[in-house]
Length: 362
Image (cartoon, rainbow, N blue to C red; front, side, top):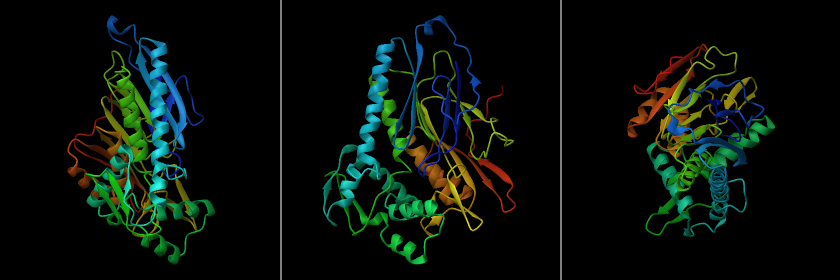
């Protein structure tokens, strides 16, 4: 069975993996790589099943191995159900989501939060503290302003940026772990979990599949992929990394392929999500200091044990820049990254952490 998993950020402000699965092709998909053949008769009873559904503004894809089609379908249905439930909790687009009900509560009110929302907010705030606000779940006033900018193709005024910045700040988000509650200290605050939510949903979907007896599975949501045990007889899930690849004609296209198991991988960058205004290219990733999209061309592929973190850490590297971003990963032992960036002469360079996987030699 052919499979290709490309890492390329895509859709609604989050960079993405483009997943090319042989039996559920998307218009953006291309040719496939051949997986190694299965090894050993002990795996012959396991069959491969593939599923795709739209959730959280992107396509979620699930690949799993199971000996029973009915049970495989039930497992996939349960995983997609978990994702749909999380969207009703974490979405800043859905006015009826738990996140937006929290935001719309009277300023200063202590609001009980669900397990899922509290966990994501807690991790996001920890990352905000560690990055001194570069990554911040309270930046929604800026990210929403930038969405309008990209749509209208016109930069916001300094006054609009200042107003949005005044309503941001992770220190104004108070979380009480004992009571599992949250407080927003300022009127007009908003929350955006776009840089972490899809990764968290991927982790939860993989967890649900395991609860249904699926040992070998892959869950992919745009730029975030979470995998469990390898496919039967394989070394791992075969993933093609496109850290900063502009097109299929790019010399780097298709040259970096790895095997991955029991881990997650995410790619962040502006390859697909950007806007050009007055001849200047701006990323969809917003710099909280300027209130505008990043102008430095950078892409990051991050491997972590959880997609929740690989998702967020990829964005953090882009915000901090390639060198500071790589240094930041020292706070997270066992995390590996490959970063591509353009210098002032638009020449592409790559740097990576020492243990980032080398590409497979075909």
